[in-house]
Length: 146
Image 1 (cartoon, rainbow, N blue to C red):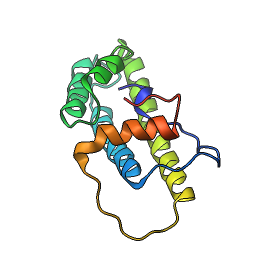
Image 2: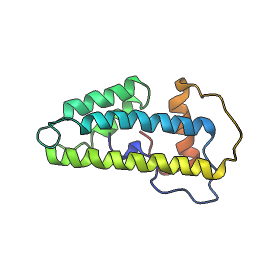
Image 3: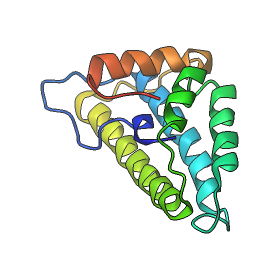
């Protein structure tokens, strides 16, 4: 679960169109699912003291089973996970902060450009990966979505 799970930490330039409602909801669902897994990993008493790779694999597997990330993306993410316990702790802490920054960036981007239009229907969670891919391609080119 490395940095590629997150969108850019800085708001996009004014000329960039805002993510759609469905894309914003997908992004928030994405960040929430990742934060939930990261919180559990960060509370692990062995973090920083022992190798917790198995717990990270379990967390990534949960994200794949919930269709938050694809199996290919999960394998790509795990290749950069450090071996040393101290590095694992630092890595996961940085990911948590980056994920929160990305969440705020997407919310700000959406809020800055979308006029209040009243209640909208909740997008279908089965379209999560498609909504995320479309958002990253259209609004955050050059960034990776895990």
